[in-house]
Amino acid sequence: MSMMSMRLPDDLANQLDVLAAATGRTKSFLAGQAIRDYIERESWQIAEITQAITEADKGEFASDEEINNISAKWQRHAG
Image 1: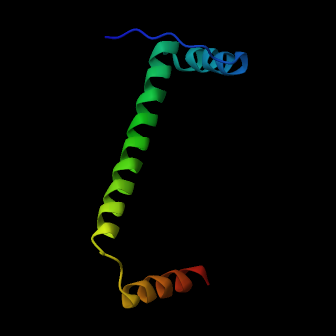
Image 2: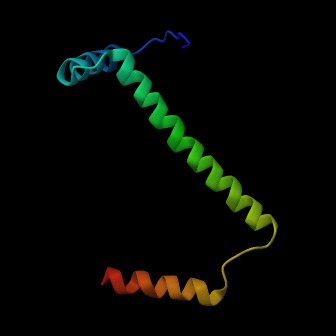
């Protein structure tokens, strides 16, 4: 396991202390989980953007009919 040290603003460090006490978890566990969640979310988003760019570069766009169908669906649900 790797070791990392970081500086936190006092208010964030205090919130982490409170959360650790309330959950019975260590601050290290909570910080690690927060970093894991962030990395998973950001990695997913980057992969989706990369895939969309690849599709766009190939000219793979939605047809006018597909766009109209989606628009009609959202208009029905918005009303």
